[in-house]
Length: 331
Image (cartoon, one colour):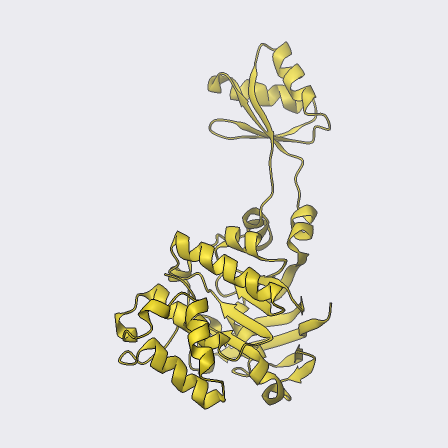
């Protein structure tokens, strides 16, 4: 596979009365062709700044960037027609219909008008295409934003928080659409706080924290690197948890006492747990390995809690004076 997006040593600083703040501090990222790639990070970590810098909306202070094999921003005009992007909240004229909105965009971009119907079908707006956008819910507006990004049938699609306002049915539809686009040869970069969906949809991920890359690679590989040997232990009587923990520590185990169970690590053979506790008259009702998911890895690496997209903070890019571009997905 060849890289369609490459970032090396990207730097962006902002100066204010409070001093200099590094929004991006030598950030690296690579996305291979044909993948759905998750771009993850807590609020203020530099995600939106990275995307805006790639798209020429913010000038970096250093580093190298390339889209579809061409250096940007120097060669951005050459590849812009092959990149569809949605960054932050969707902005549309409320009195226009979805069909009119996309028809105007298609005309301005030299896109075949027939493509308007195709993208409306793709995002599930065909039956509401003649309604004014001001009657749309947040999720429908985000569907329209995705449709606008797909008009050019881009080789690379960049979506910032596409699940904002998405209901469960819309999440499933979005997941299917992203996979179908990747199977058709399109590369999708997806930024989202819904980490369970990222784990299901994406082939690979990059995690950013404080402007630096803290993890990257295939989803399975990233999870494997942070796999735990811990097991969850439940016993018959919760009142015996403290004494059970002391027994297991005597075996050399590391034990964390939770309200209704123990988290135990450092034991090579889990069977030793049941034998040691049974010898003390404490009987195990559950002995289960602790699985690692993308959310737990995210929390470990960033020390933050993922939040719903509706509560996102304004990214530092807003201070650069760049106008917001359409963004999101959902209903």
